Structure formats: structure tokens, C-alpha cells
Length: 193
Image (cartoon, rainbow, N blue to C red):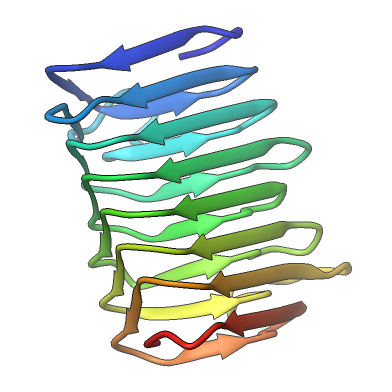
């Protein structure tokens, strides 16, 4: 979805990769199914890129988003936003909120489950990522870094913020704040983490 377009999925959709950019919106309705898998041109396997060179927004009100690769929000000079209000997101790869740009993941309900190596909130220098959890479940089978990442390099600062006012946040491997080249903040308001 590109150039200010809006796409709403109410049934089933499958693609090699999902790209939402340049002021565009992708909406998943209750009961919808989106699957990103396979190997399209360029070798990007099951890849979802939200906000590569402009603003990209995904709003999931229900249904299932299954991704066999990585989910990236916000590349250099761009902003990626994911609003999870219901349903489930299953990611086999990594989730990066603020790759080298601005990223925001707002979860008010549903389940966000990643089976990959890690979740990174504000990964590379110059990035700014924020995850807001007020309901539902965030389950990370790998590690999680808030502000920087072990793969980060170069001058500048990666800024990551995690705000939890509800829901459940479970990380099976280490949770790191302010890793390599980063500044991380975690705000917890009386809920499990």
C-alpha cells in the first residue's frame, strides 16, 4: 500500500512481503487473515515494512497477521505505526520498532507473539521507538532491547521507550535497557512484566 492509499482486509490475503508507506494505511478487520511468507524478488522472506520512506500505518482491529520474517516500523526519515486493538500478530523473525527512524507500536488488546531472536525498541543510532501496552499480551520468545541493540553501531543515539499501563508483557530471554549506542526507558504501572 503506497502513495496515500488505504487497504482494508476483511477476508484472507497473502503476500511475499507487506509494504505500507507514503501516508498509506492498512486496516485488518475482525476475522481477517494476512499472511506474509514466501520469497519475493529481492529475497525478502515474509517481510513487513511499515514506514520505509514516509508515514505508514497498520491498524489491526481483529483477525490474524502471520509473518514468517521480520516486522520493521520506521526507517531513516520515516515513521511506522502499528495499532493493535484486537486479534493476533505472529512474527517468526524480529520486531523492530524504530529501525533507523521513528516507530510506534500501540497495543490496547489482542496478542503480539514473536518467535524470533529479539524485539528492539529504537534499534540503530538516530532511531526513536516507543511501545505502549495498555491491554492484551506481548510475548517475546527471544530477547528484548529498549534503546539500542547489540547490532547497533555508529555515532548518534538510539532512543527506546516502553510504557506499560495494562496487559501482560513476558520476555523469555534478557530484557536490556540502553544497550549499545542507546538510551532506554521502561515505565510500568502496576502490571506484570
